[in-house]
Length: 111
Image 1 (cartoon, one colour):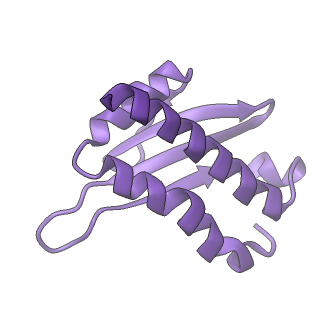
Image 2: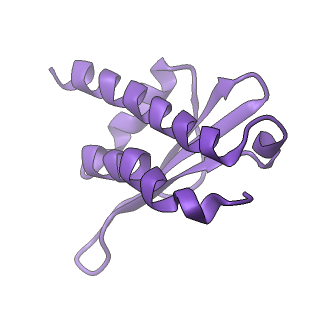
């Protein structure tokens, strides 16, 4: 994504890192929340969901479980076509919005 490296730190802090911290040790809950939001399980990472977030724009929220040697990790991936619809900055905002929505449902799920 053109100019994406400029947004990487903010993108990870506002979305990816929040997902990793929230679902570490309870990755399967992400799949349940994803299904509730109309998403489907995907084959990326150890656990992932694919969500249609806007017309013609899908994202995948991906988690890798950690172990004694490797910390947990994750990412939010966009379909290649996203650059036909949104500038890079808006992709970072979209990822943050999706993360906020997932966190809202996580709070409801765990309360």
